[in-house]
Length: 495
Image (cartoon, rainbow, N blue to C red; front, side, top):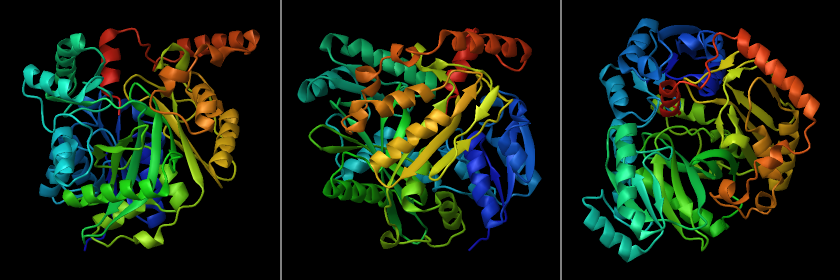
């Protein structure tokens, strides 16, 4: 059994800060890695040591395995925490750590590889009688085969990249006449994004709810779930608001889905923190979607309703210890909601809104948690994910948490770029969210961008606009999204 003394965090931003917090509480030394734009970022300031790994582009820094391994050796760290995004689900990186004698705080490479490929993950689920959406059980071999399956299961059809994520290589097809062209477009996008043009098709579920189960597993065969989360409020197939537990599930259905998640984890000999994702249709049928072999962005809502520190559990498991809790030890308490505060403009289809944070005043109070990766005076650039922070609240029940979140959003002050704060407040005030009767089409079905600016004092808008223009001219580090190449690089490097 190994005792970890120093951890290198192979990531940046709020997740790097999050891991550092737990390490400090456990008495474990930390090493930050950073690119040039991140030289003065919070994670660099908080870590015990830091190592420069390259220029702004993640392809020259955070995604370069050799540079991360060299940083581990240079710093004398004995373990790596990959966070999420970047190399966190890269089986080659996990394998390299293993060969170099570095503890990888995550699952075995074979589990990452198996569950990271949507086709093989789906085949595994089918083999173990975990429900999957009707459709092809393996990678699409020909247009003719696809047409036969489509005719059998009926439209609408969902085309998905086998190696994909983040909505890339995905197409919804309502009309058979668009089927062939949509497959070609999905394959092309998948090839450009992942270097892999394999796709598969499945029945597109109407009024789908996105439900996921947090699991934890150790090297001694113990696997537990830490309840469910709902992540149905999304834009561009990416989550913006999450809550735990889901308002949709009955206790019986909740148990069925959790049991399926544990079954999936055991099927791939999983170790560490992972999330098994499902879709639930309007008839309360549930279907396996995928498994994320890492810590999730939205893990704070789970920590708040369960009282667990998932990062501490990850570290304990990586050291070879048994899980610090059993299934009976984990008790669900109250309700939690998380809002992702992105530097995006909800009024302009959530386009990136980069620039300096002239003001960043976070909300406080009982049951309010802010995980931030950027500080006041820093710039949000095009190089990485535009998330400024994650705002999470805990209440005695769902309505208490909703009201607390609205109060926190009202107190949250950011000047320097557009953010998703107004969108989050709009959503939490909407009848569909209040009643829990919403699905993954919330933005398309209910969001009215014009409502965000309604009633705002024009004089205030004018003053803020002048401030932003002045600061933008001063800030030589801030890059406008005018160059198509840079914009594409930012988009492809989103976590």
